[in-house]
Each structure stands twice: as C-alpha cells, then as structure tokens.
Image 1 (cartoon, rainbow, N blue to C red):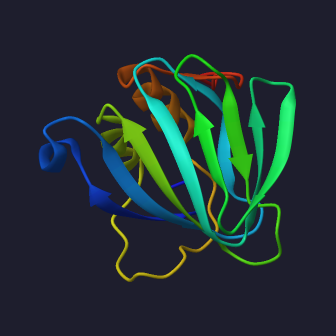
Image 2: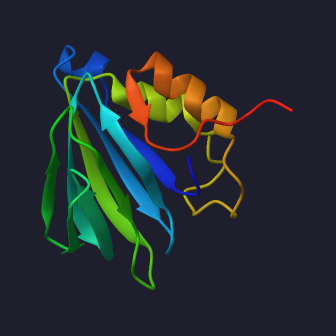
Length: 144
C-alpha cells in the first residue's frame, strides 16, 4: 500500500472491535499523505529507521527507533520515511476499522519484501478514504 509493505497483526475480528494493528515497512520517501481520522485514534511505534511526523499542521518532529507517536482522531497528521533505510513501524488504531482501509487499498504481497515503486491509485485512495471517514488533505483527482 502506497509503496510500503503492510502486514496485518490484529483486526477488529481478533479484538472484538477494540483495536487494529499492522506492521509497516516503508522505503525512504514513502509515508502517508496529510489526513484526519474521524473515527479512530492512531498510534505509531518506530521499530527500525526513522520517520518525520507532522501533527496538527504545525508540529514537526523526527521519530527514531523506540519512539512512540500518538495521532488523536480529529487532528491532522502525516509521516514520511526521512531516512536512507527502510522504516519499520507498528501502527495501531482504536477502535478497530482502519486496518480494513489499508487492506482494501493495498494489493496482496506475493513475498514479504518491499514492493517495487509505483504511482498510487488516487481515485481508489479518495474513494476508500471517504468510505472509512478519513479526510485526505490533498487535491482530489479530477476525471478527464
């Protein structure tokens, strides 16, 4: 998904809807666009590498291995792998549900390796964001 390898660790089915958990590995330069979750809080635990986070539009900081970042619902956030190596993180969502967005947006990985670079399907991204009550702070794609 979005140039990253995502592995589902726990879904709402596993936690009676309490939370979802994924492990994400992203090459340098990948991350998430600026967005706002309207249904869930999101948290990040950096296992390896480093990422630049923006919270609320005005707070930017570097998170390295061992860092924990909390993105409360209703607050804009984004992250980018700012390092020169892949960044590996755990991403949690409470309540569960956003992990389904990730699984719908991405394609099944034939191997547990980083996917080749590719352009995201922006129309699919915006359609699923709306379905899962995530506000993307990007210009919407226009139909030609």
